Length: 290
Image (cartoon, rainbow, N blue to C red; front, side):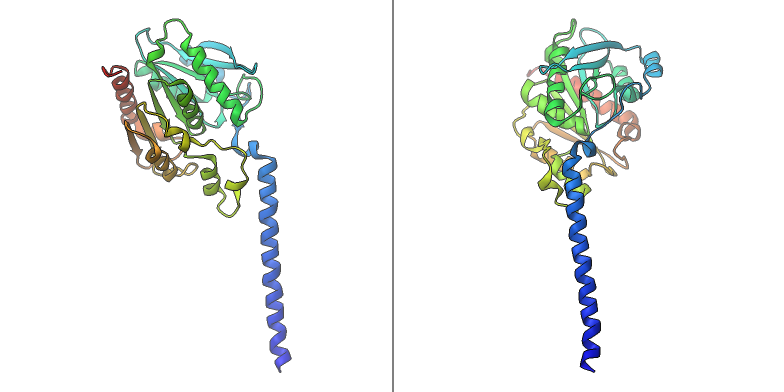
Protein backbone atom coordinates (compact mmCIF):
# COMPACT_ATOMS: atom_id res chain seq x y z
CA UNK A 1 0.00 0.00 0.00
CA UNK A 2 2.77 2.46 0.92
CA UNK A 3 4.58 1.58 -2.27
CA UNK A 4 1.45 2.45 -4.29
CA UNK A 5 1.28 5.92 -2.70
CA UNK A 6 4.98 6.64 -3.08
CA UNK A 7 5.17 5.75 -6.77
CA UNK A 8 2.82 8.56 -8.03
CA UNK A 9 4.67 11.04 -5.82
CA UNK A 10 7.96 10.03 -7.38
CA UNK A 11 6.48 10.44 -10.85
CA UNK A 12 5.08 13.88 -9.98
CA UNK A 13 8.43 14.92 -8.51
CA UNK A 14 10.25 13.70 -11.60
CA UNK A 15 7.80 15.61 -13.85
CA UNK A 16 8.25 18.91 -12.00
CA UNK A 17 12.02 18.45 -11.94
CA UNK A 18 12.03 17.89 -15.70
CA UNK A 19 9.82 20.94 -16.14
CA UNK A 20 12.19 23.08 -14.06
CA UNK A 21 15.22 21.85 -16.00
CA UNK A 22 13.45 22.59 -19.30
CA UNK A 23 12.62 26.09 -18.05
CA UNK A 24 16.23 26.77 -17.06
CA UNK A 25 17.49 25.45 -20.40
CA UNK A 26 15.00 27.65 -22.28
CA UNK A 27 16.08 30.74 -20.31
CA UNK A 28 19.74 29.99 -20.94
CA UNK A 29 19.08 29.37 -24.64
CA UNK A 30 17.22 32.63 -25.21
CA UNK A 31 19.74 34.54 -23.10
CA UNK A 32 22.54 33.30 -25.35
CA UNK A 33 20.51 34.17 -28.46
CA UNK A 34 19.96 37.68 -27.08
CA UNK A 35 23.67 38.10 -26.40
CA UNK A 36 24.79 36.85 -29.82
CA UNK A 37 22.22 38.75 -31.87
CA UNK A 38 21.89 41.79 -29.61
CA UNK A 39 21.99 44.40 -32.40
CA UNK A 40 19.26 42.51 -34.30
CA UNK A 41 16.93 42.99 -31.34
CA UNK A 42 17.66 46.73 -31.14
CA UNK A 43 18.04 48.12 -34.67
CA UNK A 44 15.55 47.56 -37.49
CA UNK A 45 16.87 49.62 -40.39
CA UNK A 46 15.16 49.91 -43.76
CA UNK A 47 17.99 50.13 -46.29
CA UNK A 48 17.54 52.04 -49.54
CA UNK A 49 15.65 51.46 -51.84
CA UNK A 50 13.24 50.37 -49.08
CA UNK A 51 11.21 53.38 -48.04
CA UNK A 52 9.03 56.03 -49.66
CA UNK A 53 11.74 58.29 -51.01
CA UNK A 54 10.17 59.36 -54.29
CA UNK A 55 6.72 60.25 -52.98
CA UNK A 56 8.05 62.05 -49.90
CA UNK A 57 10.70 63.89 -51.91
CA UNK A 58 7.96 65.16 -54.24
CA UNK A 59 5.77 66.19 -51.31
CA UNK A 60 8.42 67.73 -49.06
CA UNK A 61 10.93 69.06 -51.60
CA UNK A 62 13.79 68.54 -49.12
CA UNK A 63 17.40 69.56 -49.56
CA UNK A 64 19.62 66.49 -49.87
CA UNK A 65 22.71 66.36 -47.61
CA UNK A 66 25.71 64.11 -47.14
CA UNK A 67 28.21 64.39 -44.30
CA UNK A 68 30.89 62.20 -42.74
CA UNK A 69 31.43 61.09 -39.14
CA UNK A 70 34.78 61.27 -37.39
CA UNK A 71 35.30 57.55 -38.05
CA UNK A 72 34.75 57.99 -41.78
CA UNK A 73 31.14 56.84 -42.22
CA UNK A 74 29.14 58.72 -44.86
CA UNK A 75 25.59 59.62 -43.77
CA UNK A 76 22.54 60.84 -45.66
CA UNK A 77 20.15 63.57 -44.52
CA UNK A 78 17.26 65.79 -45.55
CA UNK A 79 16.50 69.36 -44.52
CA UNK A 80 13.48 71.62 -44.87
CA UNK A 81 14.26 75.32 -44.73
CA UNK A 82 12.09 78.02 -43.24
CA UNK A 83 14.12 81.22 -42.92
CA UNK A 84 17.42 82.26 -41.43
CA UNK A 85 15.84 83.65 -38.25
CA UNK A 86 13.87 80.46 -37.52
CA UNK A 87 14.86 77.93 -34.87
CA UNK A 88 16.36 74.70 -36.21
CA UNK A 89 15.09 71.31 -35.05
CA UNK A 90 17.35 68.29 -35.56
CA UNK A 91 15.21 65.16 -35.54
CA UNK A 92 16.69 61.88 -34.24
CA UNK A 93 14.34 59.15 -35.43
CA UNK A 94 13.59 55.79 -33.81
CA UNK A 95 15.05 52.35 -34.38
CA UNK A 96 12.98 51.23 -37.39
CA UNK A 97 12.68 52.35 -41.00
CA UNK A 98 14.58 55.38 -42.31
CA UNK A 99 14.13 59.12 -42.75
CA UNK A 100 11.71 58.68 -45.65
CA UNK A 101 9.17 57.19 -43.22
CA UNK A 102 9.09 60.39 -41.12
CA UNK A 103 7.38 62.64 -43.65
CA UNK A 104 4.36 63.58 -41.53
CA UNK A 105 6.30 64.70 -38.46
CA UNK A 106 8.69 66.64 -40.73
CA UNK A 107 5.73 68.40 -42.35
CA UNK A 108 4.30 69.37 -38.97
CA UNK A 109 7.60 70.71 -37.66
CA UNK A 110 8.19 72.69 -40.84
CA UNK A 111 4.62 74.03 -40.78
CA UNK A 112 5.38 75.35 -37.28
CA UNK A 113 7.95 77.67 -38.83
CA UNK A 114 11.14 75.73 -38.06
CA UNK A 115 14.13 74.71 -40.10
CA UNK A 116 14.09 70.91 -39.88
CA UNK A 117 17.00 68.51 -40.32
CA UNK A 118 16.72 64.71 -40.22
CA UNK A 119 19.47 62.18 -40.85
CA UNK A 120 19.82 58.41 -41.08
CA UNK A 121 22.11 56.57 -38.69
CA UNK A 122 24.78 54.30 -40.14
CA UNK A 123 23.17 51.30 -41.82
CA UNK A 124 19.84 53.06 -42.33
CA UNK A 125 18.45 54.30 -45.64
CA UNK A 126 21.28 55.52 -47.87
CA UNK A 127 23.81 55.88 -45.02
CA UNK A 128 26.86 53.64 -44.98
CA UNK A 129 27.95 51.21 -42.26
CA UNK A 130 26.01 49.22 -39.68
CA UNK A 131 24.57 50.49 -36.37
CA UNK A 132 25.82 49.98 -32.84
CA UNK A 133 25.67 52.16 -29.73
CA UNK A 134 28.95 54.01 -30.13
CA UNK A 135 28.37 54.35 -33.86
CA UNK A 136 24.98 56.04 -33.60
CA UNK A 137 26.41 58.41 -30.99
CA UNK A 138 29.10 59.39 -33.50
CA UNK A 139 26.38 59.88 -36.11
CA UNK A 140 24.42 62.21 -33.85
CA UNK A 141 27.48 64.27 -32.95
CA UNK A 142 28.46 64.57 -36.61
CA UNK A 143 24.92 65.65 -37.51
CA UNK A 144 24.99 68.42 -34.89
CA UNK A 145 28.37 69.70 -36.08
CA UNK A 146 27.25 69.59 -39.71
CA UNK A 147 24.03 71.51 -39.05
CA UNK A 148 25.91 74.06 -36.93
CA UNK A 149 28.12 74.81 -39.92
CA UNK A 150 25.35 75.23 -42.48
CA UNK A 151 24.85 78.67 -44.01
CA UNK A 152 21.97 80.57 -42.44
CA UNK A 153 21.70 78.35 -39.35
CA UNK A 154 22.02 80.00 -35.95
CA UNK A 155 23.84 77.53 -33.69
CA UNK A 156 22.32 79.15 -30.61
CA UNK A 157 18.82 78.29 -31.84
CA UNK A 158 19.29 74.54 -32.40
CA UNK A 159 16.82 72.26 -30.61
CA UNK A 160 17.22 68.47 -30.55
CA UNK A 161 14.15 66.25 -30.92
CA UNK A 162 14.69 62.54 -30.19
CA UNK A 163 12.05 59.85 -30.59
CA UNK A 164 12.32 56.38 -28.98
CA UNK A 165 15.89 55.13 -29.55
CA UNK A 166 16.64 58.51 -31.10
CA UNK A 167 15.99 60.02 -27.69
CA UNK A 168 18.98 58.16 -26.27
CA UNK A 169 21.17 59.48 -29.09
CA UNK A 170 19.82 63.00 -28.59
CA UNK A 171 20.58 62.89 -24.85
CA UNK A 172 24.19 61.91 -25.61
CA UNK A 173 24.54 64.75 -28.12
CA UNK A 174 22.91 67.24 -25.75
CA UNK A 175 25.35 66.28 -22.98
CA UNK A 176 28.29 66.83 -25.33
CA UNK A 177 27.18 69.76 -27.50
CA UNK A 178 24.81 71.85 -25.34
CA UNK A 179 21.93 72.74 -27.70
CA UNK A 180 19.41 75.37 -26.61
CA UNK A 181 16.82 72.72 -25.63
CA UNK A 182 15.85 69.06 -25.94
CA UNK A 183 12.56 67.31 -26.77
CA UNK A 184 12.23 63.62 -25.92
CA UNK A 185 9.26 61.64 -27.22
CA UNK A 186 8.41 58.01 -26.38
CA UNK A 187 11.90 57.40 -25.07
CA UNK A 188 13.36 55.52 -22.12
CA UNK A 189 15.66 55.62 -19.11
CA UNK A 190 18.11 52.92 -20.27
CA UNK A 191 18.38 49.93 -22.59
CA UNK A 192 18.52 47.66 -19.56
CA UNK A 193 15.18 48.98 -18.31
CA UNK A 194 13.63 48.37 -21.74
CA UNK A 195 15.06 44.83 -21.84
CA UNK A 196 13.71 44.07 -18.37
CA UNK A 197 10.24 45.25 -19.43
CA UNK A 198 10.31 43.37 -22.75
CA UNK A 199 11.81 40.13 -21.42
CA UNK A 200 10.75 39.92 -17.77
CA UNK A 201 11.64 36.21 -17.48
CA UNK A 202 15.14 36.56 -18.89
CA UNK A 203 18.21 38.09 -17.18
CA UNK A 204 18.32 40.44 -20.16
CA UNK A 205 19.25 43.61 -18.28
CA UNK A 206 22.45 41.97 -16.97
CA UNK A 207 23.51 40.53 -20.33
CA UNK A 208 23.20 43.58 -22.59
CA UNK A 209 26.38 45.21 -23.81
CA UNK A 210 24.28 48.12 -25.11
CA UNK A 211 23.56 50.62 -22.36
CA UNK A 212 21.88 53.76 -23.76
CA UNK A 213 21.99 55.00 -20.18
CA UNK A 214 20.07 58.24 -20.65
CA UNK A 215 19.04 58.33 -17.00
CA UNK A 216 22.56 59.01 -15.76
CA UNK A 217 23.44 61.38 -18.60
CA UNK A 218 20.35 63.54 -18.31
CA UNK A 219 21.32 64.48 -14.75
CA UNK A 220 24.09 66.65 -16.20
CA UNK A 221 21.74 68.69 -18.40
CA UNK A 222 20.48 72.10 -17.33
CA UNK A 223 18.82 73.10 -20.62
CA UNK A 224 14.99 73.23 -20.98
CA UNK A 225 13.47 69.79 -21.53
CA UNK A 226 10.12 68.71 -22.96
CA UNK A 227 9.08 65.08 -22.46
CA UNK A 228 6.21 63.58 -24.49
CA UNK A 229 4.81 60.08 -23.99
CA UNK A 230 1.64 58.16 -24.80
CA UNK A 231 -0.18 56.42 -21.97
CA UNK A 232 -0.73 53.25 -24.05
CA UNK A 233 2.82 52.83 -25.34
CA UNK A 234 3.22 49.10 -26.00
CA UNK A 235 6.95 49.26 -26.83
CA UNK A 236 8.46 51.75 -24.37
CA UNK A 237 6.32 51.67 -21.21
CA UNK A 238 4.99 55.05 -20.08
CA UNK A 239 6.70 54.46 -16.72
CA UNK A 240 10.16 54.49 -18.37
CA UNK A 241 9.44 57.91 -19.87
CA UNK A 242 8.40 59.17 -16.44
CA UNK A 243 11.50 57.62 -14.87
CA UNK A 244 13.72 59.58 -17.23
CA UNK A 245 11.73 62.75 -16.53
CA UNK A 246 12.11 62.31 -12.77
CA UNK A 247 15.89 62.02 -13.17
CA UNK A 248 16.12 65.30 -15.12
CA UNK A 249 16.83 68.77 -13.76
CA UNK A 250 14.52 71.75 -14.08
CA UNK A 251 13.41 73.44 -16.25
CA UNK A 252 11.36 70.53 -17.55
CA UNK A 253 7.80 69.64 -18.47
CA UNK A 254 5.98 66.39 -19.22
CA UNK A 255 3.22 66.25 -21.82
CA UNK A 256 1.06 63.13 -21.52
CA UNK A 257 -0.82 62.04 -24.66
CA UNK A 258 -3.79 60.03 -23.46
CA UNK A 259 -4.49 56.86 -25.43
CA UNK A 260 -1.42 57.14 -27.67
CA UNK A 261 0.72 54.11 -28.49
CA UNK A 262 4.39 54.23 -29.45
CA UNK A 263 4.25 55.32 -33.09
CA UNK A 264 1.09 57.45 -33.20
CA UNK A 265 1.78 60.07 -30.53
CA UNK A 266 1.74 62.98 -32.98
CA UNK A 267 -1.42 61.64 -34.66
CA UNK A 268 -3.34 61.13 -31.41
CA UNK A 269 -2.00 64.38 -29.98
CA UNK A 270 -2.97 66.21 -33.18
CA UNK A 271 -3.00 70.00 -33.02
CA UNK A 272 -2.27 70.01 -29.30
CA UNK A 273 0.92 68.00 -29.92
CA UNK A 274 2.01 70.45 -32.59
CA UNK A 275 1.09 73.45 -30.44
CA UNK A 276 3.01 72.19 -27.40
CA UNK A 277 6.18 71.66 -29.42
CA UNK A 278 5.87 75.01 -31.22
CA UNK A 279 5.34 76.95 -28.00
CA UNK A 280 8.16 75.12 -26.23
CA UNK A 281 10.68 75.79 -28.99
CA UNK A 282 9.69 79.42 -29.40
CA UNK A 283 9.82 80.02 -25.64
CA UNK A 284 13.34 78.67 -25.23
CA UNK A 285 14.74 80.29 -28.37
CA UNK A 286 13.36 83.73 -27.49
CA UNK A 287 13.99 83.45 -23.75
CA UNK A 288 15.75 86.73 -22.76
CA UNK A 289 17.72 84.85 -20.08
CA UNK A 290 19.73 82.98 -22.72
